[in-house]
Every structure is written in C-alpha cells, then in structure tokens.
Image (tube, rainbow, N blue to C red):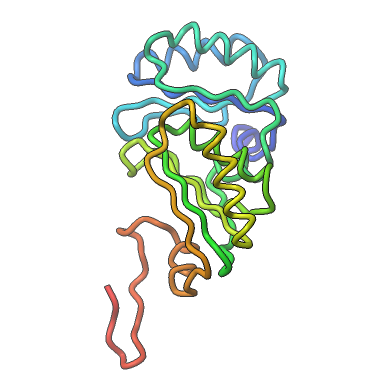
Length: 211
C-alpha cells in the first residue's frame, strides 16, 4: 500500500533513465535509490529490450540520484531526463492517467525515445493552453513514445511548436501531425485507448458490426 501511495503522489521533480540492457538497468536503479531519499515511481523492461527507471522527489534529491544513475549507467544510457519542475499533467500521464479529448483539435508528436517525449510533453503543456490526453511510453510501441495534445487549434499548434523546439537537438522526432475539428468517432476511439488489439467493436445503424 505504501509503494502505491508513493507512485500516486505528485512530486516536484522527476528523473528518467532509459538504458539498453537489463543488468545495468537493475544495478543503476539500485544505486539511485540508495544514493538519496527518492521515490521509485516505476522501473522495468519495455520494448526493444530497454530498461526504464523513473524516480521522483525533491529537486535536490532527484538531481543527486540522477547524477549517480548517469555514472552507473554509463554507455548503456540511451537517453535521460531531469525535470526539476515537472507539470502535474505530465506527472499523472506518466503514471497512466488519461484525459478527455476535445473535438476542436488534436496534436500528435512521436519520438524514438521515452525521455524525449516526456520532455516534449512537459514543454508543450507549460507553453500553451492544452490538455495532455495521453503519453505512450515504449511498451507495445517498438520502444518509441508519443504525446497527444488537445484544445483549441491555435493552442495545439503552439504546444507542438514548443515541444518540438525543446527536443530538436536530440534528433529523435519521428513524426508530428495536427488534426483540426477532430471527428467525434475518432475522439471516442482515442479516449477508449489507442491500442488496436483493445479497440471496441462498434455497431452500425443497420445492426452490422464494425471491426
């Protein structure tokens, strides 16, 4: 119960390390939690054989753990992220929370790494009046990540522009698109989950079934 409470709590700072093998990932995670008083929010394997470590806590404690993780991880670190003032929307989305999808506009950004999409999402929601519908982080997605922004068209455009500029130097962006006036059916599909294998079967007006 205590571990679950730690994961649900919103921390002022988070750090994420993305490593390319499990043995180093485990030893790095162990070193980080021993180094400073942080909460281990999530850790484990994801697609493409990567190991992710996500920690939260005070800015000083998270920074200390992050620096230790970078040293221990060494050349196995694929990408990394330190956010000393993470936005609450991003914090919740990382832990799997989803938000409703506006019918006005939807912005989609996809990256090669998890650390990059988290940083981009944080920049986007801080720089524009948008809602972060979902963050997809690696699992069942080839190790990649995507963020869904929703809101007024001009705000979604601003969020995507800010997000892409923030991570431009990483050279990890794979694709981005904006859909104005999102169709209600697609909005409903997005809200129910983006995994095709879990999509609901829809009945047509004449009684036939979609999918």
